[in-house]
Image (cartoon, rainbow, N blue to C red; front, side, top):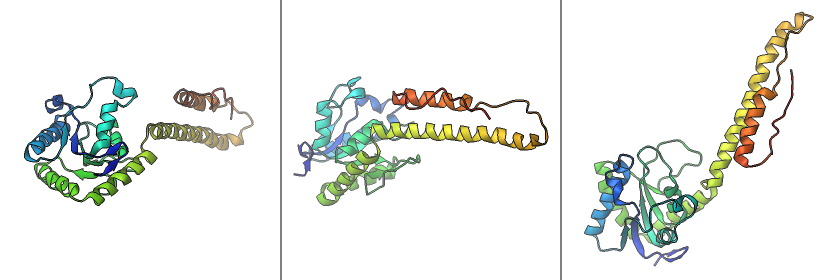
Length: 239
């Protein structure tokens, strides 16, 4: 059997959604449809599957992985996943890919840094009637082609652990705020420099601009996000 990080991958296919997604207004289009598909797949084939939850719903998932959930991911050859109807790239997706299993996920369209590539890191499918019919054929194909399945699973794991951990998201936010503060500083300079040039013919200057008024609030936000006092919040720079 193919080896996962926790031992042999003895579960052919997993789809780890609770039955409530079938009627949920937030999840029924993607996860509800996929769960119904997985239930039918289990009825039609004899290979071992895990369909439904392996751990309780609740806050434990917000701070740590439930051991049974983790063990199931590590024991699965293929994990079937669907994004929430209103957004893409939830925590369950990154957890599944990080397990090293081959993850099937509905096609993602929102631009992100370091996007997942079809057939390289994951396998995309379409939430259409034709897409769901093709999904079964592709699952059967990869279950019978171990080397291809394991290669994509491993490449996905390496890619996600390099680019899509929680710390990577925090660094993206900090980087965006830093770029914003730099842009505000440039804008502030742009506001004052043209007037200085225009007013240079006069001998009297009527006012000054303190750049700290623009930069200090942004730096205070950065300190809150990083839990540090890395950025000064008492700048007093007048032009």
